[in-house]
Image 1 (cartoon, one colour):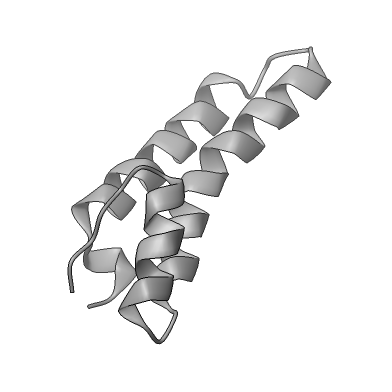
Image 2 (tube, one colour; image 1 turned 45 degrees about the vertical axis):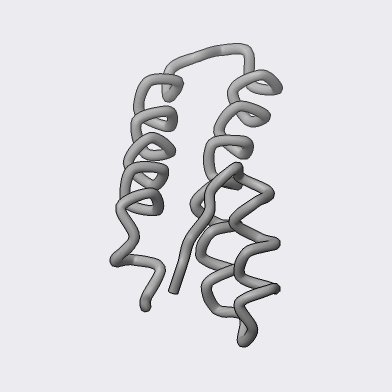
Length: 71
């Protein structure tokens, strides 16, 4: 299964994009950068985990995000 097909990845990627848009004009650059990086880490970890070869590794990356994926 491709990570792009996972509902949880699609939703987290959408949330990450919404965070970027919402904070685009925020002048507190340090805060903005920290929040946008945090928002991007969720879909990134899911994508990285789904590219792993074993189910144990996939689960490990998904559990970092409190997500459980059964393939």
